[in-house]
Amino acid sequence: MIEKQAIGNTEQNEDETKADLVKLEGGDAVLNAEDPGQLDGHGAVQPTRLYKRRWMIVLLFSSYSLCNSFQWIQYGIINNIFMKFYSVDAFTIDWMSMIYMLTYIPFIFPVTWLLDKKGLRVIALVATALNCAGTWIKVASVKPNLFAVTFLGQFCCSFAQVFSLGMPSMIASVWFGSEEVSTACSIGVFGSQLGIAIGFLVPPILVPNVDDMDELAHHISIMFYITAAVATLLFILVVCVFQERPTLPPTQAQATARSIPPEQYSYTASVLRLLRNRSFILLLITYGLNVGCFYAVGTLLNRIIIEHYPGEEVNAGRIGLTIVIAGMVGSLICGIWLDKTKTYKQTTLAVYFMSLVGMIVFAATLSLGHLWVVFITAGVLGFFMTGYLPLGFEFAVELTYPESEGTSSGLLNCSAQVFGIIFTISQGKIIDRFGTLAGNIFLCVFLLIGTVMTGLIKSDLRRQKANMLAKAAAAKQMSGEDYGTTTLISNPQTPPSQA
Image (cartoon, rainbow, N blue to C red; front, side, top):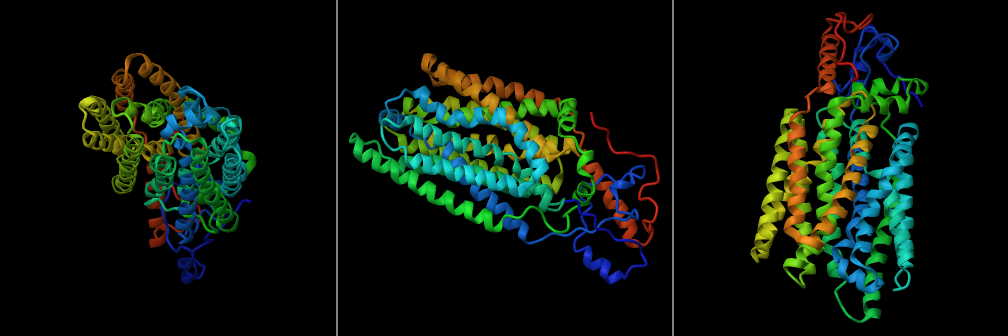
């Protein structure tokens, strides 16, 4: 599956060459004279092109990610209703959300290995198939004595998430040009966030808190059937439409990656290199702290709101919706900002600090007795806390280039799941014993630690340095100053070494 396409030499027909180079992106290539295998057989810059289909691919991914993420929170946001229907305690229902986090941890390494070996299409097919199966299992679980069946369905959906959570940065790199990768990654994350938003909003509307168990079963069944129908449609679309990668790569980095023989790549060695990269390890911890806090707030939001505003299940869902919608706006703004400015560390640090501020303000205003104030403070919290998600992905790709985007994203998500479980269980116990204020202060402490650690990350933007080298080489070749018959870089400069 190795594709090597190149511009041979300058004696080729110039018009044909320009047609192939539909849009030359300097991309992320590391063009090193000492490693001619990174170029084509003649040492020339390779042809790149951006395809319109890339938008269909990222939107389809966002759609099935949306369907899966919706189910993460559909039990937790009406925690009290499912407790009554299945006759279980609050902690058991919390596990319906935490199973998404727990499943991710043991399976992320084999799944990212499979992503590197088999590519995006296989992973997309497995993800949508598992998600579809999980939804239909839930349809069969709408009886008070079948909690184990609904848990099995939720487990299938959580397993599907392992195959999709780390894909946004991979799709962005494989399909999009170097000036739009951060925006594309934000769109990929956007789908997951929108799914969580719908998960906060729709279940309280579809499943009212009624006492008649037959009527309650009917409402739950409607929600499960709608979810199953959407999941089935998305599975069919992925089978018919989702494509592995474009014919021509979008950037020089992808052209280079395609030219590397599979036997020269070691997944284990790649993971070990990442774990020796000090800046990446700091980001790994800080990303886990931030996103883990978000998972805890999302999972326990019903309990947090109901304690201060009894009977407001629907508004608890709307507050969750506000958090995520604000975060979606934050994600898109941050993605566009990164594509324009490339200020990865500065933006990440600023957003992290504002997440801390948002959490403090949210915790301080919960007990004021005014729901409209909670809506506002929750929106501020969401804008920065969930807006941070694509920043972490893209900053990781910069710090770890040329390692696989799927591997770095998978490790980040693994960290988030670990901290998410710890924070959800801990905050839940603190809320039960000391109240919601103490639980929220607990999260604020860890966001403060994460902010300080983010400031310690060295801004080693390897992909951007490689990008500038590739663009300079391409400009020389296209202007006729360098015919590319020997090397593109004659000086002894080499890209930053792997830490």
